[in-house]
Image 1 (spheres, protein in one colour):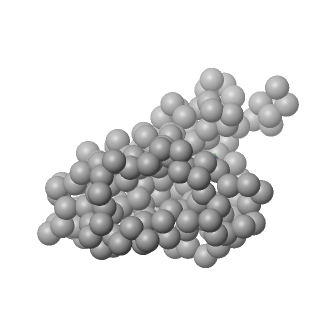
Image 2 (cartoon, helix red, strand yellow; image 1 turned 30 degrees about the vertical axis):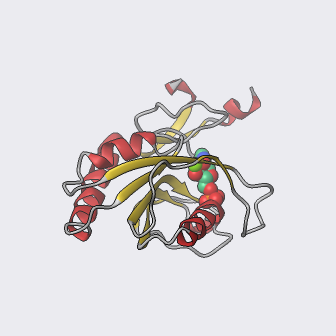
Image 3 (cartoon, rainbow, N blue to C red; image 1 turned 45 degrees about the vertical axis):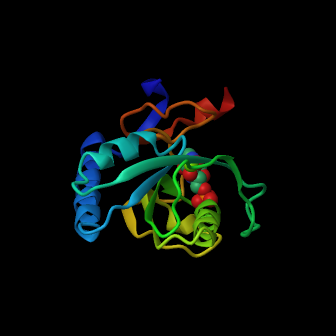
Length: 179
Ligand code: IMP
Ligand code: MG
């Protein structure tokens, strides 16, 4: 599987430093709160797991899974919830954790969804940010690192369901797409 990778974009060491930095920042910002950390499956898994180890305040966890939108240009009502959270988030501070923000269509819709549920506050934490891919404007509250507009895999990010278990983020060799 590793042989399919052309180059590393975010290394294991860089990822650990990102988790440390964001974990410390979240711990400080929420030191007097008890936020619900909501991971977007399946891409959030490795990042959320590592990030949580560096969060020192009280948190509860939840997960949701949404279907990808159709086409990519419609910016409202474009998500279907495949698996919803279990907690009641009304009046709660929530932090949504995702692997990457590209067009921002998915997260914009998720934020709207939670605002309708009358959360007290909602913030976004993403490992990767691709600002050049934006279709709707959205600036994440916590972002690990900005990457150029290229397709990446690993550390939660997949191509056809694979590569999520790579411990780093990288770019696939051209030949992989021809298989
Ligand atoms: P968007 O911000 O609404 O475009 O959606 C972001 C989602 O698209 C992410 O959670 C990923 O599932 C997927 N995605 C975007 N860019 C990449 C990439 O470079 N590699 C793998 N998945 C990606
Ligand atoms: Mg995703």
